[in-house]
Each structure stands twice: as structure tokens, then as C-alpha cells.
Length: 401
Image (cartoon, rainbow, N blue to C red; front, side):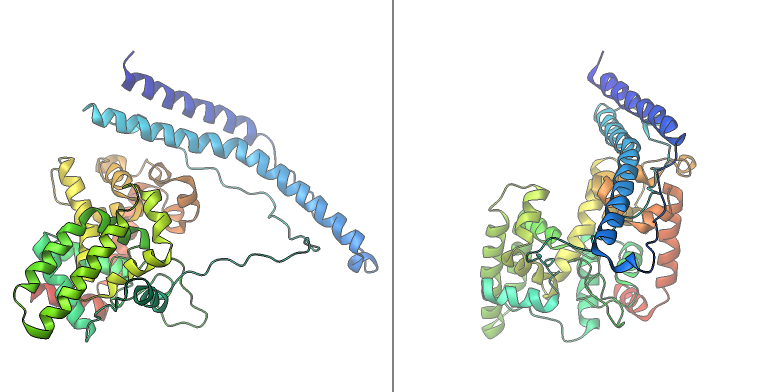
């Protein structure tokens, strides 16, 4: 039996095992015992409150155990089938509908985890705050004595980005529609996820930054893998400068070279890049997205790497903006897996096939639009809507210029 057949067989066994277990578990209800309400006298009695909490906790734990008995085999089958598809593609074998898990992932419907009314004493560790633009700029100054050269206007940044992206082979449609989707149609060069709109209580939800919403890990990884190219481009610009401008870019090149060295101080691996990206020096590297020279390079390269990935896989036709966004959203491998589905099969394959479990369960868009066809259609609809906003039309004009 070939390795490919063994892999496929393991994937099918995993799916069949999941289906059998899901059918068995579906016959029973999660044990939700309804919260007993203490009488008026006992409602503030610590003993009554603690006993009520322990009952609710037991109900929650029992429900989670039954849910995990279904959920874990499902996600194991997702991973096994993904591995099988990758093997088949490496061996130039056809991939079809039978190579995907066609059931939707199970949804937890038991009671919520209760809150302990008497938590154990001792200091609690507050969550680490997500750095915002001001923090990135501060880290750049402290770690590398670097101050990003920010654009004099938003239009200036858009023009530089459009020129660089079009020169790299990113089409106007791809760049403009992805900008609309990722940056909300009006996002500025320093727009951060969670802060797209000026609303009370808005807060950063990730380090995703700029027109294409690069994470700090993306910035570190791009510098590690493409740093030499960025330095070459800065050097080309230097050759046309004189006096103070030439001295300024010399200083910038020296600092970027230090950042490249730091990004390469660990193996070229996403988890290693993620680890150093969430340090002061990693945040300093992320601040490069704010620089008028380097920001457009980073934002473009993220899309360009996906285009080149598809080209290496012998993708016969150009990527639509929505297809390129699928690769931007889920990573090149999973995204290419998704867009490789023939159009007539896209309404049958759940989006869960292209995510890790944790990523899927945090992604409301992928959950609501739970097949490939629905997700791509929803992405196109959002792109159509955002295309009407001033920021998107300005970027389109910059490409036309």
C-alpha cells in the first residue's frame, strides 16, 4: 500500500469514527439541571452560593466532556484529511469531494462556565495589553533608535503603495478590493484591527496593521525572508538622492539591516517568528509599516507572496480579489486548498476544512458563512460595499494615476 493510500485510508477511518461517535452522542441530551434558585433568606448565604456554583460547575464540566467527545474526533478528521490532500497533491493525484469532511463542526449547546462567587485569594495576572501604534513607535525608538518616516498625507501613502504594488504585479482590482475588505474602505495607512472606526470604547483586538492588516508576526517573517530585497530597493532609491536626504536613507538602511538580523536570529518558522514578534524588538519591526519607504513594501509583499505561491502551484488563471483574500485570511496553504475547489463543489465543502480549530471558533465570519461558496460570496459582497467609500476610491485613483 502506497503512503498516499495509507494516508487517505487513515483520513477516511478518522471521518467514519467521528460519524459513528457523533451519532451515538446525538442520542443523549447535555445534562443541564437548571439553576436552583435559593430562597430570599439563603440568597446571600456563602454556603448556599458556593453549593449552587459547584452544581453549575459540575453541569458545565459534564456537558463539555460530552461535547469534546464529539468535537475532538471531528477536528482530528479535519487535520487528517488535510494531510491526505497535501500528500495527494504532492504526488500529482486528483483531489475530489471525498477528500474533504462534509459535515459541519459540532456546536457546544450546554450551559456556560459559571463564575466562582468566591475566587481564591491572591493577585490575578491582568491580560497583556495589545500594543497600539504609539507603542510600536515607542519600541522602535527605544530598541533601534528608529523613527518611522510617516507620510505627509494619506494620499501620499496611497500613491507610493499603488506604484509599488502595481510594479510588483498586484492588480488594481486585487489591491483596491482587499484594501476595502481589510481596512474598512476608509482605513488609513496606520489603521489597526479594532480601531477602524472612531467609536466609544473601541480597542485594538490584534496587532493587524495597515492596508492589508499585517500582524506583527507577518512583519518579522517578511523581514526575515525578504529583507535582502527590501534593502536592495532602499539602496536603489539612495542612488538618486544627495545631501541630507541621502544621509537620512543611509541611516534608515543601517537600522533596517539590524532589524533583518534580529528577525533571522531564530529559525525560519512561524511559531519562532511569533515568539520574537511579541517582544519590544518585534514591535519595533512592526513599526516599519508606518514608514513611507518600507510600509508599502511590507503591505505589498504579503499579497505578492500569495500570488507567487499560487503561481508555483500552476494555478491556471489569475486570482480574483476574493480568492487572494482567502489566502490572506487562512494562510497560503489553506487558502490555496480552498480556492482549488471546482466552482460546482464549493457549496458542499464546509469552511472548517481550511482552519485550525481555535482559529475557526474565533472567526464568526467563517462560522456564519459555513461553506466555501458562502464565504467567498460574502467576501465579494463586502468588497462591493466598501468599494464605494472615499478611501477605496482614492486608492483606485492612485492606481489609475
